[in-house]
Image (tube, rainbow, N blue to C red; front, side, top):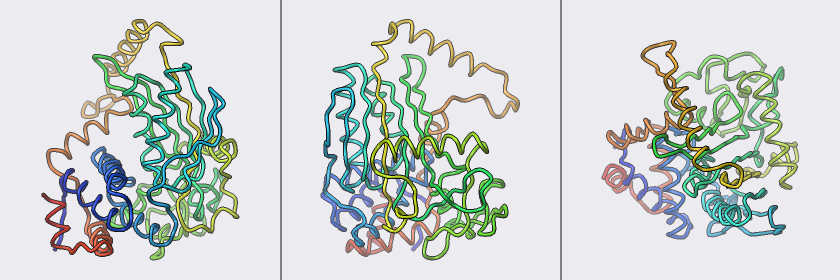
Length: 362
């Protein structure tokens, strides 16, 4: 039985049922599934519902601590330190952002570090959470816990991971928010998994093989056991590498969770640290003036003549909004390998394939 598309609600229910069956609390499983499906809806399949099998594997191996929330280590007013105690990043990140929103409304701004969180998922989620509260946010993330997957600029072997950077800026009554959320590698590591599952080649210029030669074969980076053989490269050559290193230092070193040194590779799980800065823009500029500037600037950009008439100028967040509308209407695509992996994960939770298919498409 093959499922090629699932509905958002069906995949939420299925994902939550699998995670709850594997040991997560019902509310936590629902929160994680909501986050993953929202990522899929917005076109970030690398961080979407296809992550559920990996999460179940890590739960069974002790690489994630379900039913664990964020924990405050130190409250210094405008500076706060937290740990996730290896709880699900979607819960940890949500609870962390709630705390930071409250503090930014109180003090105008807050700088916070988070260490020892399991996979935080799509970082744009937390920027959107802050945007809903009228706040600007900046997030730097590093990744440890498993072997590196990204070569430094001019390097022929992996040394770092994909280290996302995210900036969220509220919109106005006439302009949607700006959410710039990106891996600092040429593509996200999860996109290699998706390409491998779908039997597609990688874009040219994003990866090297184990000998440091350019490759478009996803199999050169992912083996059957999931270990990285080749490597991704930074986006933008030396510029992406510099930003990747900055995220490593700001999240891993300044955050206290550690950087991507060899001693951090052997945990066989996903460990994220994050530095977040949340700002109340009304403490810095007049709200009406800011709204005018945002409207005028985004209008100015959108009305730029396109190089290709079929591809108008966009602002960060536009592709995700368009993809979500399309997938809500037509379903979230599922390649055969991802569906098989979901079925295998469902079996661990006592859900048979027919039931999984009926739920996913319902």
